[in-house]
Length: 302
Image 1 (cartoon, rainbow, N blue to C red):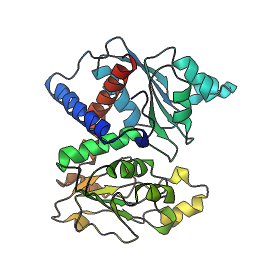
Image 2: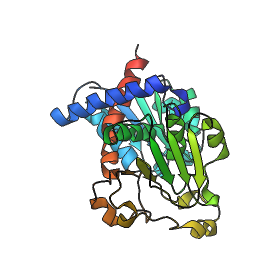
Image 3: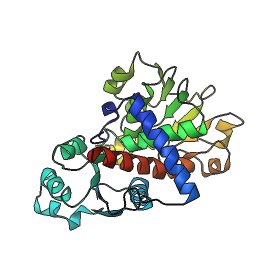
Image 4: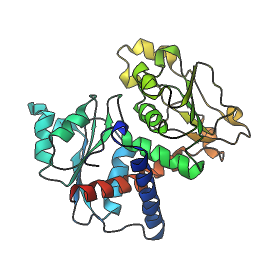
């Protein structure tokens, strides 16, 4: 890989290679806590939007690999306020660093960045479009916690319109055999038609408004993304429409995932049941992003 911008850019074998490398990185974390694969190298984290897990796990991953981190989280302190274009910012930063991770509110910003960078660019989320590193850590979570990706039955619940994590994950899952997906959302927040058309025929799909998780391996909850609504009144129409409780789960043999942050879609009491894996899912972001950084850098210097 030269860059990691969209899950459409990588195939099944590349995904499996990243997951295998992630296992090696997790073993290193468990045994030693760090390594020196990227000693002396620099990652630039350019976050034009707020982030907790993605930004900090990238920084942690780079430091666990022996590297260093530069970047920003507040554009008010950058030349963006003076009118500098994204392309010019990337041209400058790629001269300071060996890898770039960027989060931006505009769809296509990561692709534009990759076209203007001398070093590998990683899409850490571009608007409601793609979030490939989240997808890879989700796949890693499924592999580690369920035990298989093929023949998986998964229910996505909540904001499927603006939830970039589910867009990327559905596309990735379509590369694996026997996957069945339930798309559970109100009409206002249905999965975009272009995503449906992209994966239709590759996997079994069903759309519904009522929650049905009786026969699935994974329940993937999502937050209703208030910040993406043009009209806040439309947000309040669907706010709190789904709320997962211990009673919903019962004794079901299911893995509960969530990309976080959580608002009110999962009761806090669910945190303490064995099916809840979303905090472990968040931890897996470190070994997975370690693997991505290592592989991208190695490919860039070949």
